[in-house]
Length: 413
Ligand code: NAD
Image (tube, rainbow, N blue to C red; front, side, top):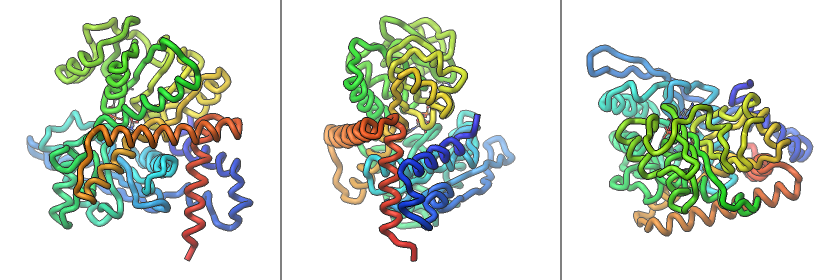
């Protein structure tokens, strides 16, 4: 299996060929400019441990492209974080912001760390160290971080507080902040709600009725997507996280599962369902929402998928080999750059509210979020039908055409 960066670049290359960039923009080095990020920032950060001694961490911030606006992208804390993963995530951010039409480019950050192994004070020191090292590279008009796996409002608050030690008070330097520090209502739930919004559009297209849902990942994205499904009266029949899984053909009580996870740290042993013996990818459900990590649906397990529809809450959960198998089996996939764009859309709303100093009601946030996502879904669907390609390929075509048009318009001097 190729790594995530190679997978991401090969699809960009394929799209560039479909759109005939080589011929249309001869000599403009389009592929070279898309393949290589604008700036790669890597450093080591030493953090003092509570018990004494130091631990050293690998830190990254990749600024992929600012062709359509300042750099924007989350920060991931996970033991598997490496340079290629962060580069791939940054490239996907450039495509995502272009696709949904918000005035940003793409970036991503990460630290190779399992945050569960650090105390809160150690984590705070690490986040502050990371921020202080990036103080010249981030800013509300330069590069705006946000949460991703392993980070949330708490870490964004520390970034905001550390940044203001060096620069003017600028709430818009980071999004996904706590409400008390200028965060937006509905930001925490936005990615999961967006996944469900695009799922509902695809369900309509497919004509699914009385369908069941399975969810992988029960963190920010997965739990809010599952809660949204539950609140809409849909049956969520299986959920899996890193600790284990639970299933119930009558539907799981998702709010109870959230309480259980908050008390125990995971969903393993949840009393409201049977333990999930196998990988959730092959569990019988009509709609599957992978909301955990990359490379979940692979060449090895794609043939076992029972779902008719997959909506990618996570970034890069389906490998290109698996994509081919799913396509041949007529399983529809709503791609990550569309399905999980709700987070960055509401991050944009947060940034706008911070600039205006005027804060919106949650209902306004949600209405604007759903309008943007439905519009983006409709354009992707239209392109897919017109070009007879998958939704993923159509989404890449739309995003890359916008990016390249802007690149050319900006000139080369
Ligand atoms: P999170 O850290 O809040 O939660 C991750 C969840 O995945 C946890 O429940 C964890 O137990 C589970 N998990 C990890 N490895 C697993 C495995 N091997 N099998 C089953 N479950 C596993 O992270 P998140 O913010 O919810 O992000 C999840 C995905 O969504 C990532 O791909 C991220 O890039 C993407 N995403 C997040 C946002 C956001 O706003 N947070 C926005 C867009 C995309």
